[in-house]
Amino acid sequence: MKWNYAFREVVIIRVSRRSLQLTIIVLSGYQLLTGDLRFMPLPILLLGLLFIVMGINEVRKDKLNIWGYVSFITAAFLFFVTLQLLLNVNTLNK
Image (tube, rainbow, N blue to C red; front, top):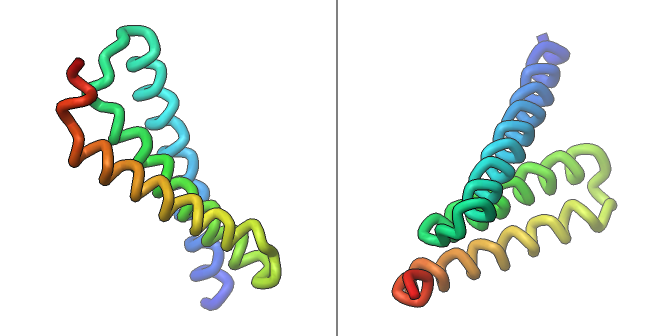
């Protein structure tokens, strides 16, 4: 029973990581091709979520690994950038 729970947890992390990666690539490609920057905070927010998922995965593998904690710090910075972009939304429309 314990193995089944751990397997499910790994699958959930993999699926969420892949879906976040695909969504970020699609949104960034759309912005690059069209030049429409109205949705700029969304890929940055999703990138922050992706770094959280990667950090969780790294910490689960090895608690002494520094890269898991660096991922959490990077995610916090990306959330801060997203918040700043959302508060200054008029600068994106110029």
